[in-house]
Image 1 (cartoon, rainbow, N blue to C red):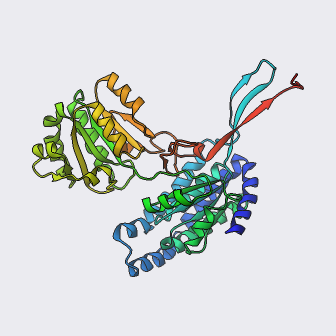
Image 2: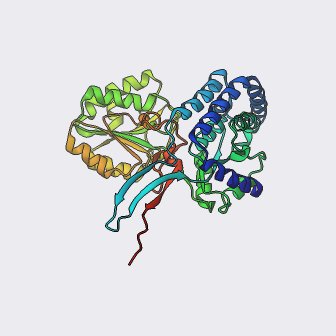
Image 3: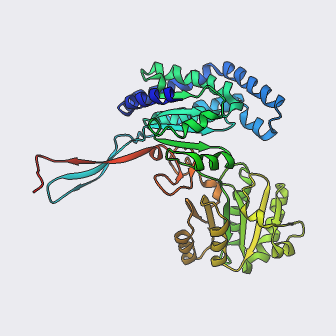
Length: 412
């Protein structure tokens, strides 16, 4: 692991000064190699799938692990889209003339070496490598042991693309051991690694949060809320709530708890329950919810805290915006929360007072996504408050340093 770190540090110095054209050429070459070698990648993936099935890997994890033709094409297309994004490295802004005659501004630069720890999804190998490469960072990728053969096959394509563009192979390295001790070493290599990005289950991220000696960019979970205010348009409220829950159950921006103002609950909940029932969603509700929705299951305290990532929705009737914000403050994860209202003053209060990485008005929480925000591909959604918050794209993988331009001034 220390050897990987030393080689990554050397490669990072090369990438930091690499021109945009070289980085883009590498991304296109990697995309072409992934398409050309799709059969070899799928053969490696079948090894992982067979090992997972024999080891009792759960069906949802097997689904995340599988690389279909469509998923391989999507990996390649994602890399091409990253190549099309503006390069943030070297961007200069906020230039100001000081009374001394000095010009002071800020330049965007790479973070250096990024360690990424993830589970199940081998497509993350290509996505993460592409984002780090375009933002001028070297990366050390430690995927889950269940995807090791797939990750190594994809890494071969990445190395082929780097070589074609004249960039160092060590710019992207995949940890080749499934030994869990490698994670512990990686997150303590503060002399070689600048940032750790964990992507996976809550247990993995909590462990890294406890043990890391390297700064981390993380999100713990996406316990997202939609609050329907009693001054909301009914049709809009139903549309937003249904989409927030049913667009995709497994994304971190899916609504997990719906809060409904008491003054509108009798008009919202029966109609909403009918639409959610058609989609196969189970409602777990408070007493007032169950009085309005006959099929609702009694909600427990744990339901307000749970990120289901499934066709389950917790529903609570609240007195109004203050009670809704208090509920979000107590149970929310700081990811994404939304209000549906026609009252501008309440919308502004919600935006100002709800302490989440994204706060939405009259829009479903499932819009929390780098592409939807115009950021392009993302490496994750950070619920931290320092450095990066919300969808972390290319800019989130860079930092800024001050630059000072003078013409011989001295300080008296």
